[in-house]
Image (cartoon, rainbow, N blue to C red; front, side):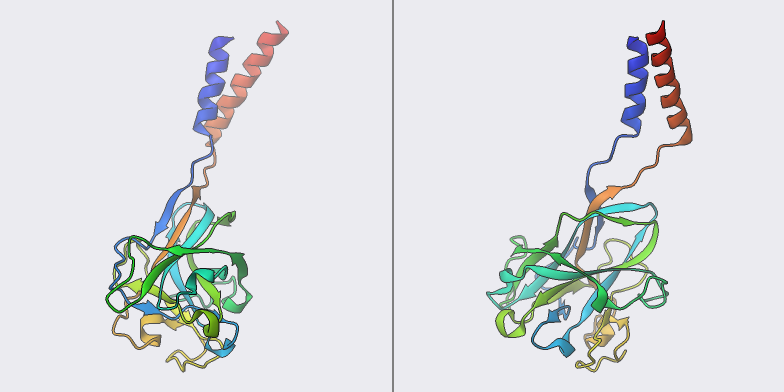
Length: 245
């Protein structure tokens, strides 16, 4: 009896759920001297809304529990940002277009976010203060493959100014392509027009290899191997036989 229970416990340990971990960290190496790109949905100037997305590569299926980005701002009202638009698209080629899951960022999911001071980065010499914007409590399944992920804060320019999405040229997470951005309203006159295009080129900053400070936390989805399931079945079967005797 004891041996049978030990066998079941051992197999159960093999298939136990994983704890949440840092799945994709493009924030590593970020400094308060890094550039900031436009990545905001403006309620009062909708044609100026810009969405920026970063490529994410995962060899295993993930369950995403939180998404966070770093922004920089000179407006003291930035911490009052409480919602954002979350987009996840299948990979196209070098941008979100053509991936088969759609690429219209205006149809993204509105999620609640917290906006807190990033104490590690603080305020830089130009007067920009850095904040961490996080959407937590998520339960999003992401199949193995290449995807584009973006978290775009909902803001009011007149009330909260323009919090810029912090980017740098350090590809710390391992993306194949640099970030892409899109201005559906066309007010910025990006080189890519109202379509997706390289973020560094679109904002006319000499930093074409721009990677946004995005971080994904969650778990790797694990599927028990058939042999483990068979082993568990044998253990349970043995326990039932013992009980009958």
